[in-house]
Length: 342
Image 1 (cartoon, rainbow, N blue to C red):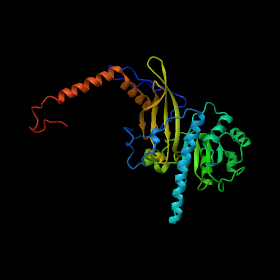
Image 2 (image 1 turned 180 degrees about the horizontal axis):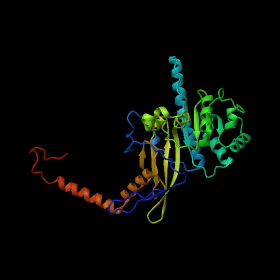
Image 3 (image 1 turned 45 degrees about the horizontal axis):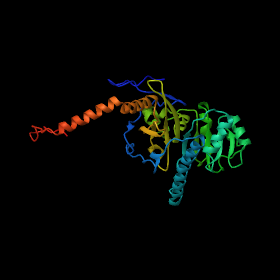
Image 4 (image 1 turned 180 degrees about the vertical axis):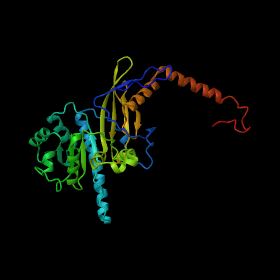
């Protein structure tokens, strides 16, 4: 666990974040935190309508519904774009859509994993679910209603129980471990134009479609492997990371890192940092254009705690009164060459 954010004078040490899942570490150089809703990267597509008003789920089923809607929105947008491409007959095919969703699970049992896939990938969005855990694949297949193909990685590669090239809907890669990235890449290749959805995959990636990865390589771009490029090619459309925030006096407060795409480009959707207030409602204390790290979370939470401090509030009021008093005093240097400072 990283150290506390260093406090400024007369301010108590900030809160410590204890997450239910580790925050993924991105070793590349990232951009600056967002300052508001419109503070997106240059050229980025703004978030979809109402996206910034969404709050984290209140139940497991709610998180599945939110993730499913996020997947459906980007898949529908891509299908519409592909249709326009065909009508224009440009001859250049669109790149395969690759998105990722990240949901917390209380346990990695076959039952829990199958429930997650049925909830987050149901509704006809996903036609084939490929599991990193063969036991989870077997269990999900035994409980299947036939609308989704549930197979292991080995089965997918040998067309046992599925046909990746001819199947309908997206292909979900479920809980695929890092040492199986090569196999996952081959599955994506065999899937042709079908969208690929990474569901709780176990390798680290920035979740921005490869932008951070490409920028971090610099002169070494030619040395990257196909597996590295593939692993970093996914854009996160839904991510929910519950947080337990330990305060100075030992009290614990709930929070979350939350991203949920609704219609806009995934890269234009910010990662929001939220905490629950005394009434149990979520309040946003930060937003970033890239995946927050531990230090980012502690800094945002510390600043939020400092803003709520009675001492700091008093200082703010004092400064406000002082500014008003200063503005009421005539400036004897006004008009004499730079005396007024805007």
